[in-house]
Image: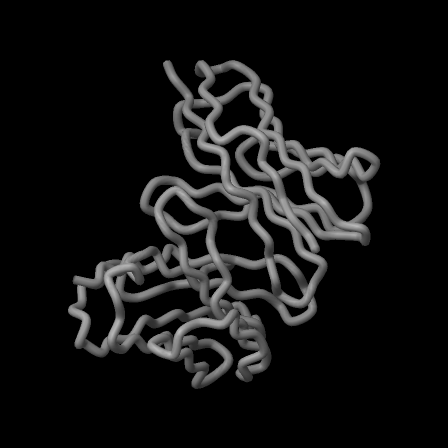
Length: 112
Length: 112
């Protein structure tokens, strides 16, 4: 069965510092990978996705992620964060068929 | 346009009430989804509709009744809910056969 592990439940960081949010998945077959962001009292917004092709994926708001098949990881990075990046971030995986499996989420808190 | 709309934004209901949540998309997506999200938790899949037919029911109690009247609309009818059903209800949609799901802003439900 598929599963997703987000290794950090909370990540505090200062404004303009780099950040990495870690995500590992378990699956014996090819998967599709996503990062979503959820701002307070809002729905989920797609940040980026890996379906195939280049393992370095660029998304919105300056975020990028790298798919590493050998380490079964899909870590999210941003070189310089802003206060407005404070939100909950969810990594998700699917084999297809509409069933998205989410990680437990990482709360990113950007401090001035 | 990658917009999914949901109404109402907030809903308070008693345990004997009947209410409905509405979701709409005009992206030509033929797959639509209902998720339930409790505070500080990831979304949990409830139902999947594909070409207006129910394709996945994740063992959801019968007090939740989904309906897909046409390819753009998805409803969730609520009856005799329990206080533990209080949550954020998220709708999503995707092209059939494509794995990227786009989420609406959600309806925050409080059951008294």
